[in-house]
Structure formats: C-alpha cells, structure tokens
Length: 158
Image 1 (cartoon, rainbow, N blue to C red):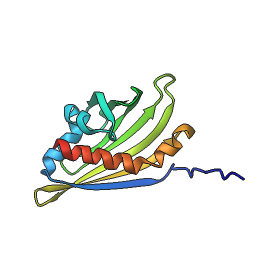
Image 2 (image 1 turned 90 degrees about the vertical axis):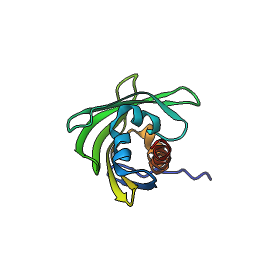
Image 3 (image 1 turned 180 degrees about the vertical axis):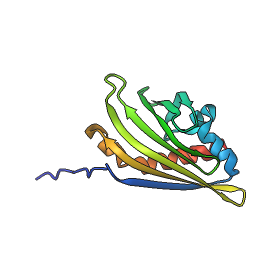
Image 4 (image 1 turned 90 degrees about the horizontal axis):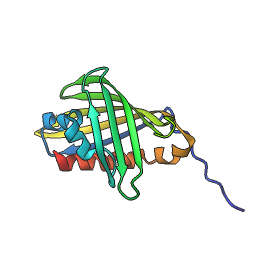
C-alpha cells in the first residue's frame, strides 16, 4: 500500500523569518528600496535577478525577474508597494506568475520591519499567503527556507 502525501493549503497562512544583520538600519532599509541593491539579494540561493524595478512609495510598482541559475528558468513577479515608513517598515503585495499565460503562481503580502539593535538591524519578514496555484503548493511550504536564504544574501550585501 502506498501512502499519498497531502499538502495543506498555505492560503491564509503566515510565515515569519528574522535575521540580525550587522549593518545600520538605514543601510538595510535602502537595500529593500533601491533596485540595484534589491537585485543583489532577492530570492533564495541559486537565483539571480537580471531585471529588478521598484518604485518605493505607496502605489509604486515592483517587478523582479528571478532567474534560477541551474536551468535558466525565469520566475517573474510583479506587485505594488503598499506602505513605506522609512527606515522602519515596508509592505509589498507580490504576485509570481507564469509568463506564458499570465496566471498567478503565488501571491502574498510581504511586511518587512527593521529594528535598530545597537548599530545592527533586526529584519523580520512577515509573509502572508493570499493565493497559491496547485503546482506551486509544495514550493509555498518552503517559503521560510527561501526567505531565510534571501536574508542571508541580504546580510552579505549590506
């Protein structure tokens, strides 16, 4: 008899990831709102961002093309900046999608907070899942790993 794995829906779930970064809060915040800096760290290990755009004001757009280096597959995302409270908080709504048909693969709200800790910065990312296509359900369960790797990359660029 073979057991089938079931994947619980991630919709409505929140993932929280934190990292203490040895850099001042203003510099860490800038790495989230300046496209050339955001491109250096966004996404888990093994991904680069050949195109990265952000307009860091409420209603501003975000667009990132994440390229998986191992096979050259592109994972674009677009979205909107909802809240900017420099240098303490930014809230984004992001949607990954299939470029062939524009169907959403995953959509979430990302709230990042930046707390000064004696010249270092505690970055906490709250990721609230709004939608997940069935083909991406398993990947959604690993978002904590992806965001942990992203914050590790962020630390290496600040």
